[in-house]
Image (cartoon, one colour):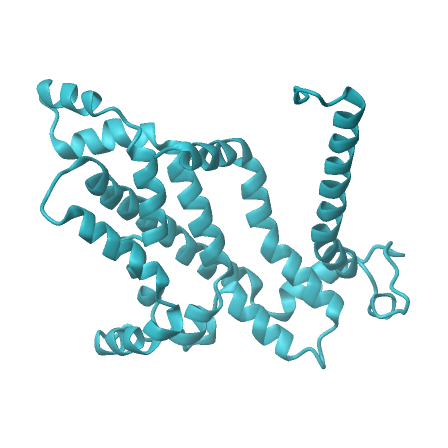
Length: 284
């Protein structure tokens, strides 16, 4: 860090120390619920409810995880959730990229107005649309199936379309013009040239979509009717509703297992994810 003119190195060092101290304290504050969840999942029921709270399990009860996975059909719920999340990732990424490419590089009458209307849909809260969406899916005979959970993703989402359009505005138009001169069709240009170029931004959209639908509770609650179709969020809710007969240690063990894949996925793709966030924030 280069100190501003007229500011001594000691003042700069003090400011940097205060900044790091504030960030460190905030990090601890945000991590506290996560640490509490993990330590509770490894305790006995008696130790988890002791006051004042203890922070180090003694002994470590790893069998809480075994009990939690047997108390509910955990792996069935995991498979259901994985199916819904993957279908949404595929649909949301491809559809949003396709629509964003149209808004970014093609000129057609009313393009800016259509884009403004697309962005305006972000202002409409989900409860306003919930009843009409349910009526449409009921008329289609989709209630009690997974289709209402993933089919809408294949129409894109306004936020992701905006994010990708900002990124695509930075792609030189000469690049696609040269490809057309070489005989490439529009679909081939999109799939073989544009998609690889915007891979970091696509990964951001895919991760956001995966995290949202992995943790989504409202949509499965509305549209799923059979307990065998439940996703993890819905399954954990029914597990929680039996808390009077369910130890909180088992509930925290199941919750830890639920969030673990999302955290692992984030750390595996952390570099590309942050790169995508940075690039989409700078473009446009």
